[in-house]
Image (cartoon, rainbow, N blue to C red):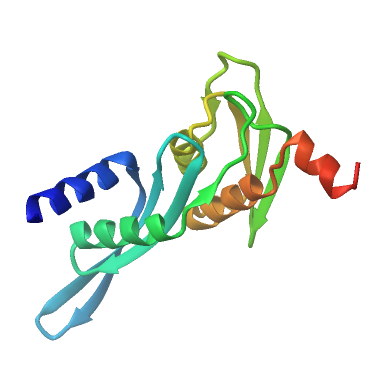
Length: 164
């Protein structure tokens, strides 16, 4: 029975791919020297339209990554896609970071940098043009990218919203 549960957990874990976007080291000076703590920004996705991000903090890098992955799996969102790209142009903003996403023709690939690339690849978007504007803070760029992906909708959804 325990083996069956372990196999189910492994299948669930293998469904999602984790990518560490950024690790931040923080130090505190104490009597015996320096005490380090780490925070990790982790993006998780299944390549089929589900993606999420999370942050984890711990005294060890591995623990921070594990915590960030768990947080990301709890915060999954679904990305609207049209074929291998996104349905329309989208712009996301968070704090000082702005991200511009544009659909691209098939075969273009993911043209994006940093955390924006990680999110788009793990979401399963194959062809897209992205540009990060403003701040280059990785967490804010991640949140801006997720905001841009949240604004995407299909033609049918847009027409239904207008009552046509």
